[in-house]
Image (tube, rainbow, N blue to C red; front, side, top):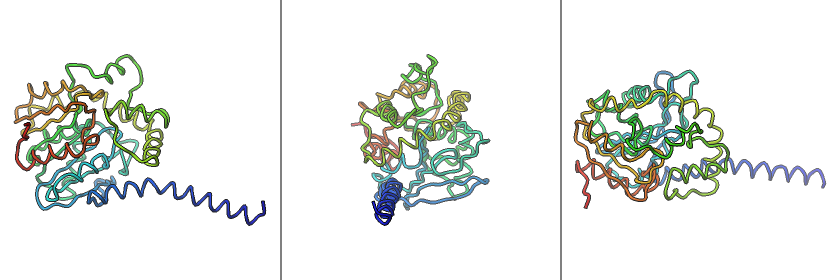
Length: 310
């Protein structure tokens, strides 16, 4: 092959690689655009917070992602909310595009306190707060510690409370095996999706590859944070009697990560108004698995103060 042909081939190869590296960013940008989300940045106590915001002139909803997740866990969900509901979805420190200092404490309690400073910095005073899994634990702790800010609490398959019936993940971890939430390699990402969802959400191949590679790259870091959370224990459970805001709890019946029997604990220990919804054929993250249904339930709750279960 002549030198000029070699150069052209090399340029084409580099161009293809460069395009591939941008595909996931383009795909995510399109998803956010379709949901009317704007990506923003703020620095709070020397920590960079990345977050998305959907404008709205009515009620404000702050949404908190789960372990290993990020702000885009709420992107498709936000798309199905009415235009007058404002949505704020941050990357918690340690996750997504926000700061990840090695010496920081990443327990759910620490994150709740950190999140309160974030809300003050962007000018939020009273709002609804929703969280999934670890994010649900953080949202619950937030509601307990800062009751005057929380108009209502929405929990999707939340952590922070010991389930009377052990989940499949608890059984695996108690046997001494590694947490199913940690991904070993790109092929193992499919196993995580099947473990988390009944019907995994559609992802174009390039996005799926990107998320798989990111999960593998973050494996050790995620294990570090998970160790802190496990050591913290069921902190939210000790705070339930301090929650004043009305609470909506939504759970996937087929959740293998946290068993839905947690809702029985909420019924016994939560003193504020509580409504519970158990969704058939649904896994650990309903707002991802069925964003339209999840948004409708949250919309009814925020705008009407109750859920029509008929």
